[in-house]
Image (cartoon, rainbow, N blue to C red; front, side, top):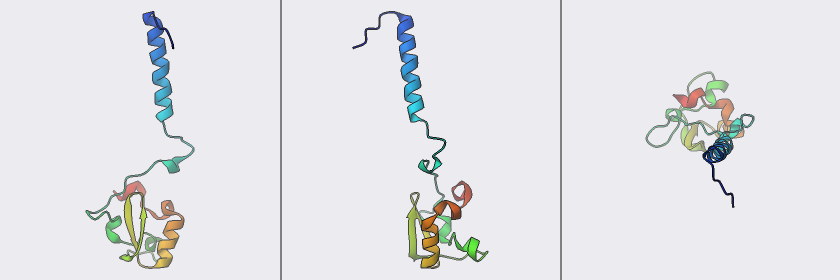
Length: 103
């Protein structure tokens, strides 16, 4: 057990303890995958109003997805027009998900 008697020693000890706690709670800058981004969803938890996020890249236009081809990622349901698009998204969601969570 640590015996802390002087006020200066107490302040130094509390300062070090606070620094250790704060540093331990910081995200690892090299590992941004551990930081979960909030996704803009509708009341049912569906992202980007049910549109296929992959179709924007593969077809160059907005295509409505369906719950038949859905994928859950980042606390949101994502709908796709095909199983192929769903699988492309599942392989690399950050490539296809809109920036800033779709806000």
